[in-house]
Length: 52
Image 1: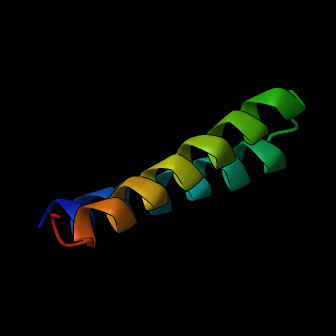
Image 2 (image 1 turned 120 degrees about the horizontal axis):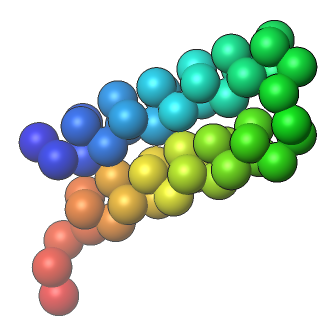
């Protein structure tokens, strides 16, 4: 369940990064959004791993 929520958050963050690119915002804002999206996808993946 939480992995689906985190994947949705990652999608919103990527959309935000694309939006900031179109608005000619500073480059670091776009990079931060992409990094946060990557971290969200990593967390979603780690939640799907079986507990050991």
